[in-house]
Length: 478
Image (cartoon, rainbow, N blue to C red):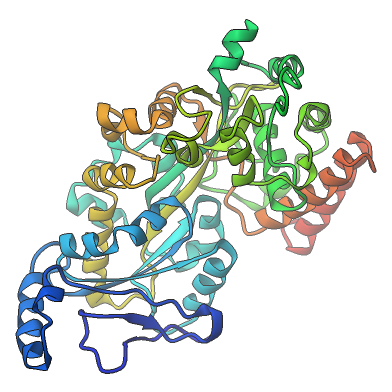
């Protein structure tokens, strides 16, 4: 795929109409750029000069002050909201926002290709938390800018702030952090006399009690589809059983260092009692899962939950907007949230996921200050609040979670805030190493054979350990 080259639509001045990236076929995306009030003035060719002058004056305010910023993001809620309110954002910023939103795999490909360019096509890029290990060689250290600007990092959830720090460098600012948590139907639990599940044994007991208690109701929805969905499920449940998938350094009981990972840390940790218990738990969930569970992933589990098809679901907290903001959803107003229920030897801790914004090292020096100012603005409490008003139920900031109106819109934000205060959110479950996706792929395949009945838990665990061990040896870690 060629490098992005930004140009105005044919015959249209910069900053007034469509700006499109120079890709072909299905990759072409047109983003209509308008300045408030211009449509009313566009009454003939004679007004074109007036429009340009007005546009320059109107945009010479805000963080952009008439300039253009280039951002590549992910098709996740926060960037989808930016697309939705794109015109409003440009008016607030006083300039042009070239926003290129891509699916996960395409985004990763674009960022890796962009890193090889002599000059970056983007001023700001979106980074998934586990990708810092892969990207850290071409992301700028934001620490000096944070210090100079006085950004209050204590307002960010500790796991969100610390997740971007690698080898002493801060490589991104959190814009959409959301842990995978357990959502459960309070009305169904209360009617059945069930307490909120604190352990995996509690989850199984509740799932058994509620499964089939009314037509079409399954006990629990979860990511069981082959591949990344199930591979991540295993890793996250393993975390609630006590440790990550590789031998990270334990800094205190069940707290692990992801800021300084060495070759010694890269040995797989998939063959002990905690891993066996995790695998068995996934097998034990199967009888209380909905039809088609072997193909269920991501938002499908949430939609089934929203419609009353299951009593519990594991969910990335930001996806709670699917029902919390839908007045027609059966689940709306009847849901409470918990960190991952713990295993026999673990603690109640949820995996932090979500997105950061950073600046590539190949951004020209004369654009770095502008990129940082836009990052400050996009991640400010005021903007985080605005995102919740438009469909994104996520915030990394304590101050935003303290806003009663935000909590009324998005109850999951208050729940996640409490988890953060209780040290129940962490980032080590998905360690930021280049081989993470390979680990997930192995587990996603082996565990799928296991829950399909083609392998025992012991066989799946043994093969996973062996395959990941070979991956690490081929990578030259030992």
